[in-house]
Amino acid sequence: MNWQSGIWTNTEDEILKAAFMKYGRNQWARISSLLVRKTPKQCKARWYEWIDPAIKKTEWTREEEEKLLHLAKVLPSQWQTISSIVGRTAHQCLQHYEQLLDAAQSKLLIEGAPSLEDLDMLRGLRPGEADPCPETRPARPDPVDMDDDEKEMLSEARARLANTQGKKAKRKAREKILNESRRLSLIQKRRELKEAGIEARIGMKGKGTGVYVINYNTEIPFERKPPPGFFDTNEEVQREKEVLKLKSPLVSSLSQEPKRDTTEEQAKKKEISERKEAASQGKLTPAQSARLKQLSQEQFQIRRAAFNLPSPIVKEKDVRELLKLGISTEDAREYVIETGETPLRRPADQFSGSFTPNSREGSEIGEEGPPIDLVRSRLSIALSKLPAPKNNYEIVLPD
Image (tube, rainbow, N blue to C red; front, top):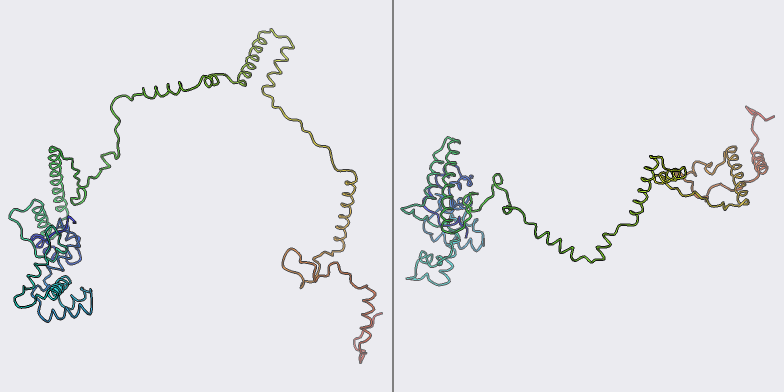
């Protein structure tokens, strides 16, 4: 069950009425801030289901019951629409409809049968069962001795509702005093619980959520403090000793044996240094000095492999053929330059837009034309068949 639910008290109803008169029907969040244990949704439901003066709380008439039964058959489960037609709230319509059904099923509407109020009592809540609609119930009367929370809520609501000029500074100061008093009460409560042996996590976040919140400005989250004193390394030393004991003598001897390359290099460097010292003292012969010079040069000399090329495999006959091919290619190039006849020298209508020429199909490349004499004879025959001119006007005969 939600901790904020429960039957409304007379004090909460009066605060809700005064807040509704000041803030109107749209600012339910501000209205619920005056009520500690109620949400904006519950405040709105309480107003429209019980406190609103337009709600009819009189007994149902015969005409209203007939209209309710007819609309419930025509509009099933549409209680909001039915309530606007009947003139009652949706919960009143649903509750009275269920009462009528129970009365009809049990056949109690006879002479001497209990009334609808008695039926409502029969449909009451069982022990330990929560009321699903506390907003539709009458308000509970206030006790003689109110709790501290209710007194604080009432005083804050009076102060806020009386502040009609909107003085923000006074409200902030009042909230600060209230927060300080709440903090002191929580500290006292935590101290008393700790003395009683109960570890309780009581925080200040929200409106009494009881959740402890880490203040990242003053605390280090997930901090693990090291134990006081020096760190004991005996365990690590013992572990290393056990690892050394597990090593075999062969492995240890191989690890301690120096490498061959390093020994040779060290011997060579030692020999060079000794001979340099002897040369500086003038004790070397010319042969020894030459040997020392050779050793010092070998130390910095880079050995290069001989550059051996294979013997040529092209014979004299192949060379001659290559020369002939080169000569023929040169002749063809000169012929093309002189004549200007290339594969692309053809009519424009047969030329495609691509850079690569098309296939030889349909082109005149490589085709042998008729001889020139045959062309001349055909042309002369065709000209001789023409009719003779009627006059000699502007006719010029060739010489």
